[in-house]
Structure formats: C-alpha cells, structure tokens
Length: 122
Image (cartoon, rainbow, N blue to C red; front, side, top):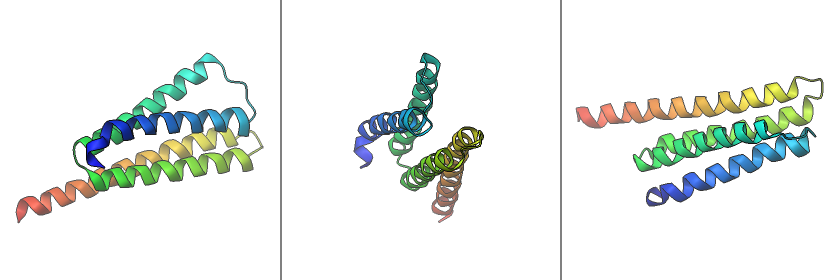
C-alpha cells in the first residue's frame, strides 16, 4: 500500500471529484458552471495530494485517520444535502466535509507526532 502512493492519491482525486459533482448536480439538483468544476477540481487535487503525501512519508496512521475523516465528511455532506432542504443544507454539507477532513488530518498528524517522539525517546 505504501508503494502505491501515486495511484492511491490519483484515485482519491478522481473519487472525491466524482462524489462532489454527484452531490451537487444530482442530489441538490443545481446546475454546474465552470467555477464549480474548478473549485471541485482544486479541492479534489488538494485531498489527493495530501493522501498521497501521507503515504509517501510513511505516515500510515495519519493516512487512515485522514481517509476516515474524508469518508465521514462525504457521508455528512450527502446527509446534509438530502435532509437540509431549507436552503442551508448545501452550505452545511460542504462545511461538514471540510471540518471532518481537516479534523482527521490534524488528529492523524498529532498521533504520528506522538508516536515519533515515543520512538525517539526509547
């Protein structure tokens, strides 16, 4: 798994781009313009690059926690899109995706940092 960081990062880019387009176009029913595609591509490339970099630097626990946060974020995104029909569902869904993804990354890096210092002091 650690050797295929490029493939996993690329797969993460494609999957997150697909899920963002699916959520906004088909679940919310909004028309997509070029700005949406650019924003979704930037977000997807950022997420894919982070996941690939975590594997490249052999931060397996951080990768797992980051990916878990990303999955929970996408679940919450779709839940907010489906349930929140009062006008705030789209904003809450996107913010939930960002918050859960960032939370997974930060917690993963903290855990990796703690493990690094424990191994260093032995």
